Each structure stands twice: as C-alpha cells, then as structure tokens.
Image 1 (cartoon, rainbow, N blue to C red):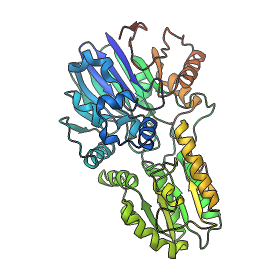
Image 2 (image 1 turned 135 degrees about the horizontal axis):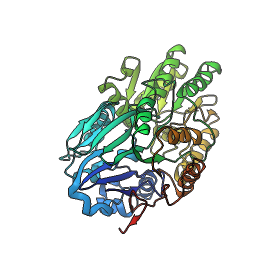
Image 3 (image 1 turned 90 degrees about the vertical axis):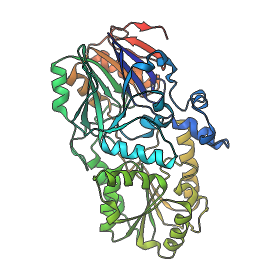
Image 4 (image 1 turned 90 degrees about the horizontal axis):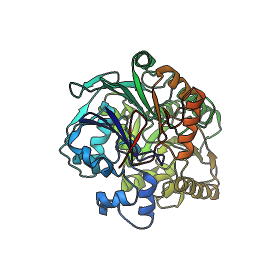
Length: 450
C-alpha cells in the first residue's frame, strides 16, 4: 500500500516537503523554507540563528514534519530535486531527525554543503550526489530515478519513485525548455516510458497553472537581456543587473553581453558567490575567468568606491532582485556604501517579483528609492522557470497518471491545477486530490487521520 503525506507546500508557495510510504519504507522529497516568514521575523529585529527547530515550525518558516512522526524510523532517503531554498533550505534543521542519506544532483549537493559550511552546521546524514538521468537503488522495492528537467537553476530533476505498485512522479519545479542556455533539454523519453507503464501519481508544481500559455524558453530571456544591454545607450553610465543568484544560465548571458560591451564585470554579494562557486566546483561553468566575485560587505564597499570613479567601465551584478532590505542593491539605493547612484545609471531587473506580499512591498520600496536617484529602471527582463498551464497539460497527457496531486502553491493555484485535470477527464476528490499541509492520503483517494 502507498500513502502520501503532504507536509509542506500545499497551502503556500514554498516550504515544500512530501513523504511517500510504501509498506514500511519512506521516501522524503524536499525540505524547504518559507522565506517570507523568516524575513518577517528578521525585519522585526529577530535573528534566525536564535530560533530552535520548534520555533521555526511555529512561525511557519519550515515544514511541520510531526505529521510523519510515526514514519520516522522508516525513512530510507531524503531526495532534494534542486538547489532553491524553498526546496532544500530546511534540511539543516530537519534532516538529522532521520537516519537517511541526502540525495541530489552534484550541483545541488555543492550548494547544500556550502550552506552548511557558512552556517556552521554539521549533520550525520550522508551526502549522495546523483547525476541527472541516473538511478539510485533505495531498497529491494524502491528505486529513485532523476529525470532531467529545465528550470531557473542547473541540474533540476523530476524524481520518479519506482515501486512494485507503480511510479510516483514528484514534479516540483520545472519548465519544458527545448532551447536551454546551459544543460540538456527535458528528458521526455523517460516520462513517456513511465506513462506507458504504471504512473500511479503525479505530484505537480501548480504555481502558474492559471497562466494560459506555454512558458517561453530561457533563450527568449537571453534575447530580452541582449536588447537592453546592447541596444540601449549607456555610455559613461554604470550598468547594474540583478537576478536570482542561482540562475546560472542568466548569469552566463550577462557575462557574455558584458564582454561584448567591453566592461569589467563584477559580482557583488554572498549569494552570488555561493551559487557560482557551487557551479564551478561541479565543473558546470568557469565564471571566475571573466568575473571578479566580491562576497562580503567590507570588500564590496571598497570595490564600489573604485567603481564610482570610472562607472562607465563597469557592469555590476548584485543581489537584491526582490528588494530584500539587506541586499547589496537595497543598501546601494539607501546610500550605505561609499558610493552614490547618479542620474542615468541603468538598473536592470532580470527577474519577476515572487508574488508574496513581503516581496511586492520590498520591491516597491526599492524602486521608489531608485526613481528618487533618477536612474533608468528596466523591469521584467525575464522568463519564468515554472511550467504554465499548457506545459502542465502536456505533462499530464505524457504520463497519464492514475492520480494527480497539485502542489507548490496557495489553494487558488492548486484548484486551478485541479480544474486543468478535470478538463483532461479526471474527477475531483476521486483521482484529483487537493490537499492541505498535514494531510495524509492512501493512493486510493481516502484521507487518513493525522
């Protein structure tokens, strides 16, 4: 018998964690943070390192895994599908509760190790790197398969959990990008093979299930970025680009165009240093050959003082795409460095605002400061890393699962994914299961008591 526990990510876009139990063996997929709760706490003067695991659960920052307390001794493996904090950021708090290895792609494991090193975290769990399009034998009855996907970071996978009773596909997060800037396109062949056999359940990213389109390729974002950086007059002005630090393909595009602009390229911020360093250690890029990476505030201040004297010779990439108050860009806008933004400087937001209240508010505050400095602002130079409604429809028809379980979103998003499933012949509460954090279901559709 197979049971599924919806631990986190079923009431919010983040805090992702799901457990799948086959007889007396359990696979955990993801251990993510809900970053807005941590930002709220820190903005009120708190410090994350002062919080216990129980307090982090209480404020809603990490998943409440007490729902699987009775399963604890049966957990055989913890699978991390990619490196974003809403999927692996809680591992430092929760993983050591389980006598199980952490399995992820080499890049994901490198990011996690760097996080643990920076936060002085030591856990007894083994780290097991598993390449994309590879398998990991968990036990006689369970095998994990990493199916290569595209997303807004490198080495993202869908996880197929193969059991004698069928295969569960854990599909948080992904897009179908047939022209990726770095890496391989999605492995449709494996998905189709699973669909031809026994796809029992699909746990699926619902974040953009109500957006009626196919998500465009990263190549589209690359062309948008090229148009702004190479097609806009910026002589004598500083050019600043901010994007997600983990978006290595986007950073590759910025470097390529920065070299065409004949500018010195500098990356400012700890997050950029962390994610780029992990990609270099995994042998995926060699940014250090073309970029100066400056991670710490004191070093950043000295570098910006130098940049200010020759601003037209530099292209800066820095943290702050969501307007985070402690980010480099926000601190630049507030004048906290020995540096001043001047009229006509360019600030390029190669990102979208993650649609939660805290991010929207922070970005709004940052943009008001930038406008006050009379800089030129370019927003929305981006394409999402998440599947839209028509990509999700293609996935459903590709693998034809017996059950569809929407995940990774508020209920508005989960219900939109459920409506899509109904359009494809599924029935709500029969083989489309819209769950809440803390629910446990048997994969015959019946809900168990917590």
